Length: 152
Image (cartoon, rainbow, N blue to C red; front, side, top):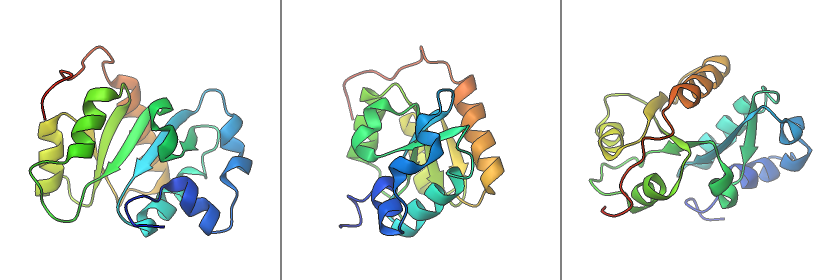
């Protein structure tokens, strides 16, 4: 499994849980969340935290990102002015896209915000606060505000 191709579903299976057996999969009113990060440890941690709230969060695999209502997008460690995957996601998805980083003022977080992500979401939030932030940002985002289809 490469670092960049694994996702939450892969991580849950590696740590011994069958993600399809999580009760949140059947929740009707839960927010569908996809997570993208270059670090497997972060993916496993986020999966574990969000799975504590099965009635509020539904984890979905990256291969189902088109069905996500919220995307937690982990920024790369090195600063880049162009993240082709993020730009593509911003222009093709109707999901609330939250950049996931350690510091809200980090250059890579600021670059993602400038590209059009909805907001930043600190990696060091406790589980309950993370869930509240995801719900709040998703619930208050104006779905009619979309980025232009073209451009990078």
